[in-house]
Image (cartoon, rainbow, N blue to C red):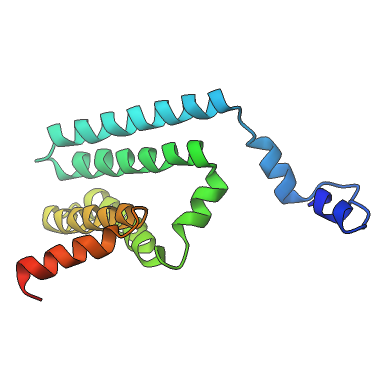
Length: 157
């Protein structure tokens, strides 16, 4: 922000703003970002793999599956920057998919850990997986349109 103030002829503030301080804390080199990405995506895939091994134990499955998804989202934050990741996640064309995805993730964990309901956990997992797929398709140009057309063709909608 200080650079912008200088460009328009204003005096930069003597005290750095909170956002500038936060951004300075998260400045990572390219190699650090790649390491962060590699570690998170590997851990995410490992958690997802482990979740498939405990599929019949809904609490463990839900925790590992959701943790794998969180780590995978975090990995892309290392590549593109966490603030950019959040701004992209909450853009208007993917806002609903993001909210459903995050809500389903929380609901999955609540259903599995607190309510201990196998059926509700499975329903939440299905919603979470579908929302994740829809969210990921929003990053592919024409992805949602193509999948919608396929479903309309298959189910005669």
